[in-house]
Image (cartoon, rainbow, N blue to C red; front, side, top):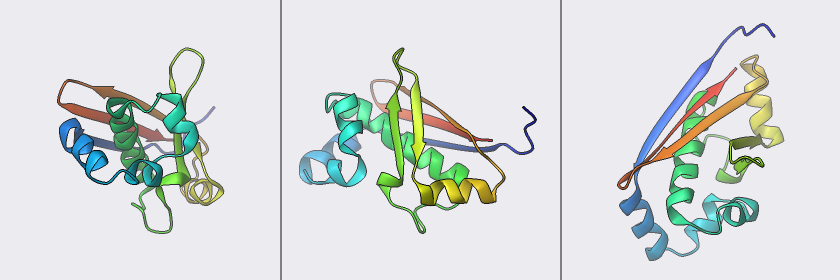
Length: 122
């Protein structure tokens, strides 16, 4: 497969700040994540923080931020071996196609204090 362009996105967030926001505003989790995403990580806030960083990284690789999209337009699940898998809504896919890209990969990681992600749209 010939790759014409690669658009990277990267993000890092403080886990403690994310956890405080989720506890202070309980509806924020369902605003940011689909039911599948929440179930995928059993509601674990550290894993959700990494997925939030992943969504931010994907938005950066799309070059849009949230303009015209919402948090549910990007879904980060995992395959049978735990690899994060990105699913884009039709709207997000259209943006990727404008950039002449058909695939996206994301890598998630976290330490005790930070969650980070990198996304590659190609």
